[in-house]
Length: 380
Ligand code: SOE
Image 1 (tube, helix red, strand yellow):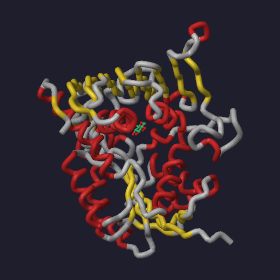
Image 2 (cartoon, helix red, strand yellow; image 1 turned 45 degrees about the vertical axis):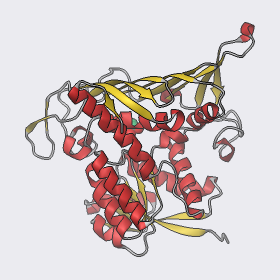
Image 3 (cartoon, helix red, strand yellow; image 1 turned 90 degrees about the horizontal axis):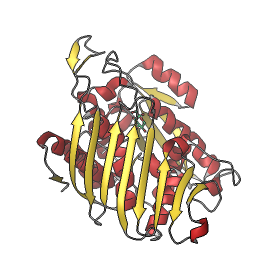
Image 4 (cartoon, protein in one colour; image 1 turned 30 degrees about the vertical axis):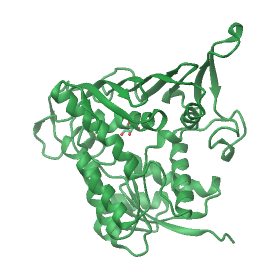
């Protein structure tokens, strides 16, 4: 019999992220030697029939239709927040007051003000927390972080990131409701800035340190869309696309471009970092590979290496198959669950904590402020 302690999970939400997180909770103790064993205790959503069907598929023991009841339940240890952004703050604050650990889907909040309230709530209650910026835990991205931290690139000159999608290009697509809440500014807070850029910023801050100032432009290409919840044509309040320049505190220059109007691209998150000695490039469509160029290589064989990140020496990979066999998108969630459970066993939060993720929200707010004022904006 395993002597593992159990950690009872209360999941709120059952969409794309509810499924991705549930899959991670189910797999994590099969692959990682974590000291806490997660138990899928309860799933919660307003639609009773749908949440029951979700609970059946993923093996949750019970369901709730009111998140306030779920966060009060004494048999729940950790609340996993997988609902649209407009509910993050209320749920997190109530769950923290009720002493629950918190795992919040990204972005932390719709604004810095909401994020500050969330940080204060978890810190006052002393509850462990994390935000699911999972691309950090794609092994090739973790390897990129390690290579930079080891100093292999030397001084960093450039950071360049894109997140390109095309799924909102049609003006006929409505806003609001399941999945499409991402187009509704009341639910989402912002458009590509909070949805896509937030990922790029989280990775960038983690690998290359703080951003000091930004100069941004945003555009809303489709100005009105039918709203699924009201049935009316309503103005679109989100940013459809964004492009901006930034300066990092370490002196490097950056350029970022998130958009949902890049026809042909579905989720092309890429970043490239150029240092004095070496460069790296990563691409979500080829997520198990890291491109690496080292100027110190002998000139006759110098060139971009295409590292297949599948070896047991590389981050997280010793837990999966044998060298040469790769893993995918869903595994980054398993890694985050594993890191959270191990940190919790030590009595610590897992990075990015709410406080870490607040830095990303601050950059997103600076980007929107810069676009509105057409001026450079300092991040703090
Ligand atoms: C949709 O734009 C979406 O699913 C985002 O919400 C995710 O955060 C991103 O990882 C992929 O695209």
